[in-house]
Image (cartoon, rainbow, N blue to C red):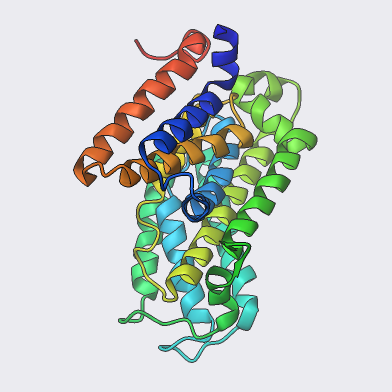
Length: 317
């Protein structure tokens, strides 16, 4: 039983939450509400994909909100909009994602070759990209006029927007990358024992740069999808993405110490967090109390899932 809890604890926690909220709220298990949970989880899941590869390598990336906000504004002013005359059409999408890759790559290069902790570098990049988002902001919210962007959020197929399907496709391919590619396997190995890999002659820095570049692409895509959902460019659109995404990864078992967890675990963590928030709303819990309950659940869940690893991950006593 203890082994089952250690290996499948987050999944069991998710199932318990679903069961409890289904009992206490008659609307929780309805199809519209389940669809709402998936819609709320889609963008945090995309962010968590990028974060997972970084966390597996025992690094961290705090630039999520800044990159997503900058990508949101950059897309809105480079596609048909109500403020500027620039219109790159759908080419704006790869341009914005490429910008996210460039930002992630820059963060990793500074961290590796200037020998600075990734936490400090990405914190600085967060502030830098927030500033760039404000600088690019044309003074009023630019409305996105190209319906090929907004339809991604507005058009529903089987009750779900295309944002959910994009997230599902990315989850599927990221699991394949994690399990069946050299990059995925080495990402975990770097987190477990980077020094051994370096002595083995493996180009560790190349894989670190790749992880941050991938993360930057995920954050930029999140910003694009936020623009599609909002219909306007907003320099603070990414605010609120960082904590849920990191908390979800840790909740699912992708530890900050590196080498543990993976995409599947992080996605379970995303669902736990979104289900918890949705369920608390469904049963009428006061919004001020929700944050306290969420924090308590995170502490208990993480403590329970990592207790058996406390020596290995050298948790501070």
